[in-house]
Amino acid sequence: IKPFDVAAIRRQFPVLERKVKGKNLVYFDNAATAQKPQVVIDALVRYYHQYNANIHRGIHSLAEEATAAFEATRDTVKEFINAGHREEIIFTRGVTEGINLVAATYGRQNIKEGDEIIISGMEHHSNIVPWQILCLEKKAVLKVIPVDDNGELVMSEFEELITPQTKIVSIVHASNSLGTINPVKDIIDIAHQHNIVVLVDGAQSSVHLNIDVQEMDCDFFVISSHKVYGPTGVGVLYGKKELLEEMPPYMGGGEMIKEVTFDKTTYNELPYKFEAGTPNIADTVAFKAALDFVTEVGKENIRKHEEALTKYAMEQLSGIDGVRLIGTAKHKTSVVSFIVDGVHPQDMGILLDNYGIAVRTGHHCCQPLMNRFEIPGTIRASFAMYNTKEEVDELVKGVAKAIGMLK
Ligand code: PMP
Image (cartoon, helix red, strand yellow):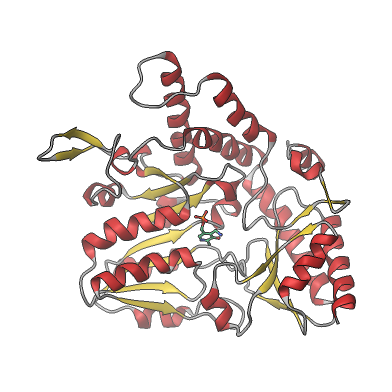
């Protein structure tokens, strides 16, 4: 699909043909989850039609084919984020599991009483709660980089927060609520000067930005397939080999072992040490189709298209009386969050749904960030490769109409 042709891209996503409440669907909830192209759906169906089998242990043909397809996704992920080694790619259920894995293994092993962990004021709950659980268990301290009025990190305060007790920094690459792209490279460079390990939450960045974990030099990076046009229930934890090797396993069970006796178990090598039990084979296999699709369309092409939509939407929405944009960072992904004076976000969301427009309303799993802005939540439109300027016009019309009805 080159050059970038939005009509051709839309034809790859069957769901975009459906109607909602009698209107053409306008799907602007991409930061929650992206729609799936036909190639992903086909890959899922093909797996179940032709080679469903459990992987790694089987010697029969179906098991070999399933294993090859599953492991091919690992190679594709490695390329997609430019990891140095395929064994640095651990399959999880998603970003949430990836962060919990690191907190429960690396964290438990390395955090002692009085140690400090730094996150930011714009984290998703899944990059707050696992660290809080760890801090409670270890009597460690959670510190927070503040967020300014534009929704950017106050970087000067980051350095102030670092002490000899700081052991981990865990930071979102791009905010799901505001779209802010954080200067993760700077954060990592500073942290590494103090021997601090850095986890980057790539839930929102992996679909929009080119990811090169070696250049970024992050220690851990986490992804959810469903945000990158792939199936739900699959994610990736990238970790530097030296760190993963030293970490204890997360879950015990089949696949993650070398040898088991009742006295003692020896663990499998990377990446299998962290992949206990039968994994989500079908969705992992189909995840490859999603990554290949994104690569074929081209991240740069997608980004340009989404940037234009975001700019246009921000201009148009801010022209409506009573609309206030939340999150006006200089570097943003395709997230437009806003509130309307005197209108509850949820009421706006319900009316927009009546016009066939799917947006997200509420706190977006970022309650502390909403508290920072002293708002209960926002209305969030987030754009993907298949969205169009005409759809943004529908949103703008819908918002204006809804305000007329609600005020
Ligand atoms: N972090 C961010 C920034 C997110 O946007 C999300 C998903 N909304 C998550 C973490 C959690 O991802 P998942 O629900 O796929 O585990």
